[in-house]
Image (cartoon, rainbow, N blue to C red; front, side, top):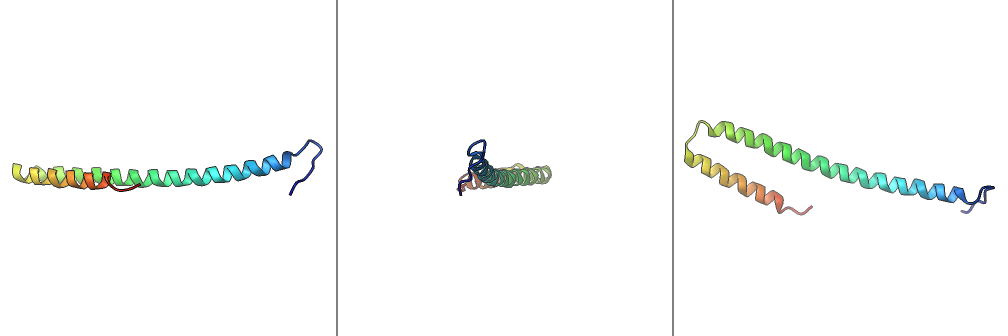
Length: 83
């Protein structure tokens, strides 16, 4: 709907501006959700690594090697996941 104003067609520009801002906010919300998800995964991984290190202190070198291989495999699987 076109509304002719005294100052020109400013009403149409304002409507497009609000539509554009709404779309921008939706995109930003999606981006922030993805960032939050990845941060939670990273923090969870760090917590798991700390638990592994604490449990490793009481074991021998062979168990350390097994844990490192398992951890590297998990990290590789995570990095190969599609975004």
